[in-house]
Amino acid sequence: MTPDLTQNCFRALADPTRRDIVRLLAETNMTIGQLTDQFDMTRAAVKKHLTVLSDGGLITVTAKGRERFNSLNPQGMAPVLSWLEYFDTYWDDHLAALKTAIEKDKK
Image (cartoon, rainbow, N blue to C red; front, side, top):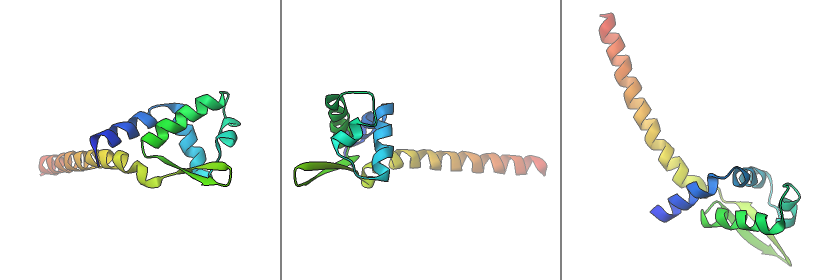
């Protein structure tokens, strides 16, 4: 996993509209037109959001005839999950140390 991809993934998820787009695409594949109907913004604005999501590895685009369908790329969340896993370990270690300290105080 490259630092640029990780940075682009977090950048993509930093915006609430892009998070909403990700949620919508988790349910079904959608064209730019279908996504534009879900938001109070122009088609060009939605396209910019989709470009950022694509750069972050979070979506893929597939052409079917004249239409282009945007899909969620679940593997694109890997940088976020990897980053969060560090904190799982951090809290596991710290909570285990706290448990040990509490048990030691009880004795």
